[in-house]
Length: 173
Image 1 (cartoon, rainbow, N blue to C red):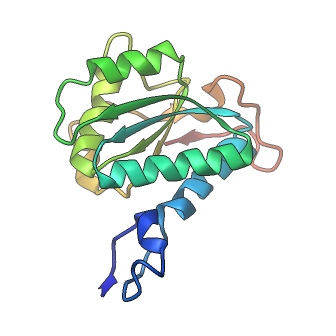
Image 2 (cartoon, one colour; image 1 turned 180 degrees about the horizontal axis):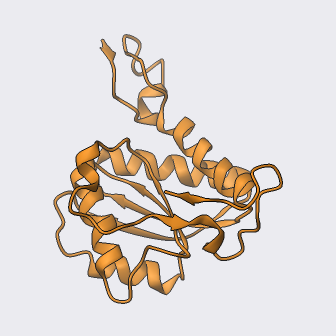
């Protein structure tokens, strides 16, 4: 069995899944890239995790925690929601409680869109200047339609100095 899109780290167990192959890396590779950027490019040492409670969110969340611990990056909070959730009030409250400025999100695109845009529209907003979002899933161009302007100046993320090679970060995310 060959899958072009299965990223669960659980499928990396060659003894349990002897006849399984994939054409994309496991979530641990994606998590490693995210944590490396957070730590080495932006110089930050803590993140919050927002994820769905399904297998994709669980696998991605476990990968982020594993890599973060190994790299000395603290996961300060975790906001978990069921797929299809519409009201994220308790999850947004958790992100505010831990004063999250860097947020890693692992869920399917429809949930991600509702979560990210809902956070930006919540009061007080979670997103915009001073926030850095890492999405654990590629999103289609339609993801951005009718959404708030989430572009930020990376230099406004608390504690982010200009990068020694890249200079002052431009608009990103």
